[in-house]
Amino acid sequence: MSGMSSMSMVFTTAHNTPLYSKAWTPTSTGAYAGTCIFLIVLAVLSRLLQAWRHTLEQKFHDRAIKRRYVRVAGEQEADQFPDESPEAAKEKNEQAILSYRGVDEKVRVIKASSRGRETTPWRFTTDLPRACIYTVQAGLGYLLMLAVMTLNVGYFLSVLAGLFVGELAIGRYASPVDDHH
Image (tube, rainbow, N blue to C red; front, side, top):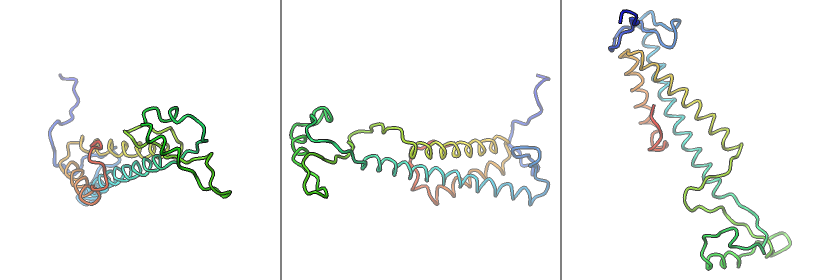
């Protein structure tokens, strides 16, 4: 036990607790207050990113559902929609598309199925922004976690205050089941 570090495992109210590095050690009450304000803004930004990501996910999903596929008439309906009722397939076959040459019964436009929660195909325009936003969101979460792990009461309360303000301001746009850091 004599080899353990001297890190305190209790909450502290010291105004000179380093944040993220020894270079970021508040040396005055004003610097400490500025650090706490920074943590509040960081936590609000974390909630903002979560809400933005949820909004983008909804747009990505809506775009995938509304995406249209051209199908040449004559293909077997059962091949494309094996679990569909014969009445619904017949109704779809009776539809035609109006082209610049008039009614074209050989080509139809169908929407992607919205049944269940099907996996959409990988798309660069969807999955790259999703991955970038998630990475930044996770990074902010880890920075907030590191601030809380200093066991400084002011830092801890600042993170909680920022999350509260962020949730109060924009929480209605975030998914209720998203992960909390």
